[in-house]
Structures are given as C-alpha cells and as structure tokens.
Length: 131
Image (cartoon, rainbow, N blue to C red; front, side):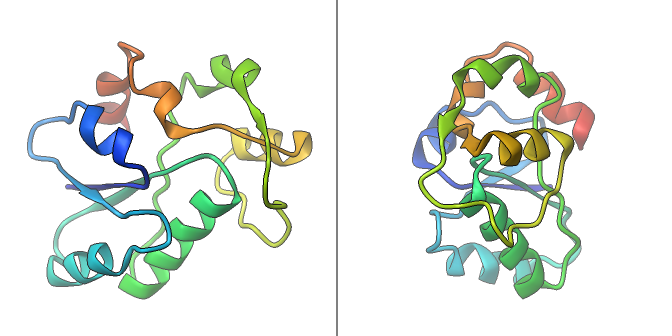
C-alpha cells in the first residue's frame, strides 16, 4: 500500500499501518510520486491531502496520470473538525467532489488542512479501516 501525502508535516508526523509506505507528493510537484506509482502498478494507492480544491485536484491528476482509480482518504471523524475550517484561497469551481464532507466544505467555501488530523489518536485505526 502506498499512501501519498501532500504536506511535509504529514510526512513527518503520520503513523502508518504495517506494510504501508508514505510518499511525499509535494503539492503540485508530484511528478516523482507519479513515477513511483507507475513503477509499482500492483501496489494499492490512496491519497491523503488537504481537504481543499488544490488537494482534491492534485489527487485527481495523480490518478489520471497513473491510470489508477482515485481513492481520496478523508478521516471518518473529520466532521468533528469542521469548526476549524478556513476560508478557501482558491475557489472550488470545477473541482471534483469526492466525499460528503467535501460537499459541506464546498458549500461553506472553506477547507481543512490535513495536519489538523495528525495528532488525533483515532487516525491510525481509521486509516487501517479505510485500507
């Protein structure tokens, strides 16, 4: 299993399930991640990025470039963090909605950083259940 993350903070702080490799997809500079995913076509892939227009668009592009289905991880407990949402810097228009929480963020013209979830003790088990 390969889990791509968009931000360096997530790369450093995330605790992974066994047999999972984390790969830094570095925001829009994700070409190296795409090359590695292409080199490992048998490995499952999940993207864990910011819950914002750029994060979803990046995941969608990576899926298209690697000819893989888009699997965008949103923690099941993310709803509890809506009070920490921030106003978007870039509009949500033409961005694929990949989760009901994303729909809520689109309606509020808001976003959540992925780092907000990293210290939540439920994250590891939630990722394991998602995988």
